[in-house]
Image (cartoon, rainbow, N blue to C red):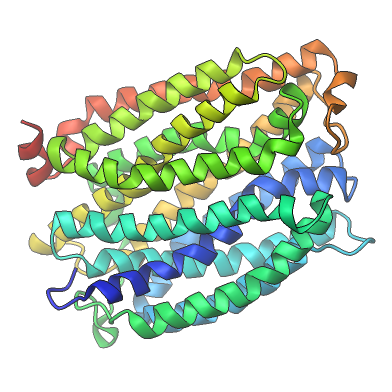
Length: 434
């Protein structure tokens, strides 16, 4: 963070995280069920289309990152991206009655392009603002706190806006447009240009420098493995609530508990990271997530209280997942600048970072949905108690893919981060952990 950066400027920077996260929740959580139940596309087809479009989107991110470094003006690129995001999301969440697979593909392409260009430059801008390890985790924490606020609102509103999910998502899409405009105005006007990467001196970091960086490679591997474990439940959570728990009317409350818990836990993870280091705090959050996933598998139908507790625990773990890995990446970039390496070029790093994050989501949709389908699960219509018509084998397959598979993958991620802990944490964090 720049020495003269004021508290109101930090908050101004974080405000754009609110609508970006507001858009991300329906984009990654509601879209699969919307296009299965309301549009009538087969579950396996929706999974395949999400896999293809998300994979294509992920491939473009490194190119967008390098191009963004060459342009150098984060504000201008974000302003260019946001209209695309608004148009794409409205098309995606408010499809016409005649919408078919091609509509889904086109809306996803426009939405992903706007979202990618905006988030790459937004996150790179935040990494360039920090001047110390502690300040960088504060910047990312404020951004993610605002982001969680957007997610909570997006999770809560559908149940309030309309009785059926399809109509509620249409209202949600149109509400997103003014929210995005207001937050963008605050961020673009209130956040200073990075002192690290002046507009006139933006440079592009060659990919060979990025990939030859062992510390970054290991951080990226942990992010990839752990991200898959988080993306699978995000893809299946509405199906799990509706058909395994048979509590579809509670889904907004469950999502709100999850994300509110993440926001409330953020300051606690920051304090824990100050005491024991970011990597060890991140490891503790992974262990909490694993326990939550395993417990979810054994829940009986209708046990909403236990699932609410699980949402609170896994949501708390989410707070660390959101704030600490980007702060570790910002530390790596700062170390490179001090060593005279990878000067500037934050967009290239975050382009690759976004690629891995989105590739996780593509795998989650492309693997989880066909996998539960092969296990005998077929999505029912959006009505409470519809799970009564499903076979026990199908529900078991859904519960196993939703809960046990992520627990296993998250355990692998925890093993990797613990094995590489001394390399992943910078000198300051390593000293704190001793």
